[in-house]
Image (cartoon, rainbow, N blue to C red; front, side):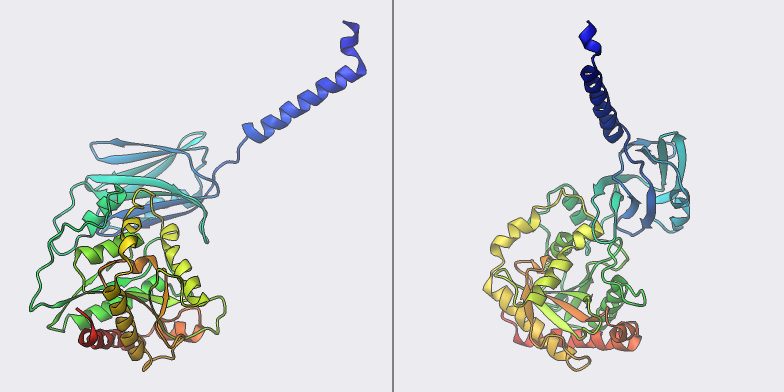
Length: 406
C-alpha cells in the first residue's frame, strides 16, 4: 500500500480531480437566460407574443379554465423589467388577449399567464437567432372557432399551414365576380415581427408598403372591371407560402407584391420591378434581393410545420403563359414607374422570389424606391409620392390587361 501514496500517484489523482471539476464547471453550470425584448402583435387573424432572450428558452405550457388561460413556465429565468412590463403591451382591442400576468413562480421559474377573451388554438415554437434578433419563443394565438369569411380565406390557410397541410390543390370555389372583373391581389411585404428594411430615419418598410397598398386598393375599387384583395391589411406577419396560397384561393388574375428596397450603400436609388425565374437570376443584384426577401419567413418567424406547399408547386412553375404574362405585367408597371421616379433597373429583372411562386397567377414584385436612400426614404413617407406610386401601379395593371395572353 505504500506505493499508492507515491508522488507520481498523488499527481495522477490531482489531475483526475482537476478534470472532473473542469467538467462540472462546463456542463453542470449553464448560463442563465435573460429576457432582452418582449413584443405583442395583435391582428384579426391571430395575435403573436414574442419573447426574445440571450439563450434558448426551456418552457412548459398548459391550459386552465374559469377563466380561460394559457400558462407558460420558463425554466432558469429571473424576472426582469423587460418581462415584468409585458401587460402594458396588450391593446384594449386585442381580439384574443384580455391580460398578461407574469411572476417569479420559484427561484428558477418565471410563469407567464395569458388570460383570454375567447377560445384559442395556440401554436408555440422557438426560433434561432437571425438578423438583429436573438433567440425567440413565439406564441401564436389563433381562434378556436374562426368566423366564416366568405371572401377572405386567410384564417383557413393559416390553419392549413400550421398543420402542414397547405398544398397546391385548390378546392375553394372562385369568389363572385361582377362583370367578369379582373381579380387583383395586392401583397404589402413584411409585417408584424418582420419590419422589412429600416431607413436612416427609422422608417419601416412594412408601414410604408401597407400605406401604398391601401392607396392602390382604393383606386382599384373605383374601377368597375376590377376586384381587389390584400394579403394583409394590418400589421401582421404572414408566411410567404400563405401569401401565395391566398392569391390562388381567391383565383387571382394577377398578384403584386409591394416593397421598398434597401442596400448597404445609401447612394443606391430608383424603382425596380421583378418577376420569377426558376433558371437562375438575371443579375447578381436580383439574386441578392431575392435572397434577402426570401429570408422574411425566418425573420418574421414561422414554425416548420408547413413547408411542403412550394415544394409541390415548383414543379409547374415554368408554365409559359404565366411567366410570359408576369413579364408583361412587370414591364407595364415599370413603364409607369419611370414617369414618377428614376429607375434602378431599366428592364424587368428575374430571380427566385418565393412570394412570386404561384404557378397559375402572373406575379411581380415592385420595389417602389430605396428606403435606405435618405432622399427616397423622405419621399416614400409623403402622401404625394405614395399616390403617384399607386396610380403608376394601377395604370400598369390597365396596360397589362390589354396585352395579356388568356
